[in-house]
Length: 142
Ligand code: DQA
Image 1: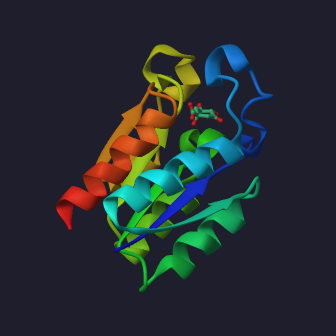
Image 2 (image 1 turned 45 degrees about the vertical axis):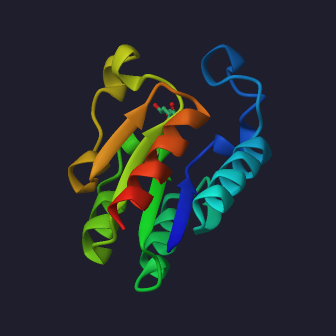
Image 3 (image 1 turned 45 degrees about the horizontal axis):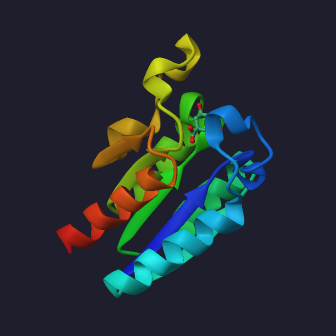
């Protein structure tokens, strides 16, 4: 089973950005944590992060047809991007939306998620745990 983890803008600055919200662990720590979990579960995992909307669309398109599941934190593009929603719909790969923070209890403008309607589930507010739950869900469905 092949899983792709996609992270949007500013996720490369984990550890530095707003540590009260996102914690002190880095993007590299996130990658290491998920690699370990994927090993335990016996699945292949790969990663991409970009600050650019079109690159995220390209990564979703390129995931087809060799990827069995996508875990995506579109970050700020969650709340704005029809293009990322359409890409997920286009490829039809089971996709889980994740957020480090509990977006539900944050700003009004974070209450909209375009991508959510194309996702099989959403996990939020659990830091790296949101990604781990997404991985477990995708593996359990295989
Ligand atoms: C985020 C929440 C978004 O609202 C924000 O723009 C991010 C990160 C999260 O992981 O909690 O960049 O997706």
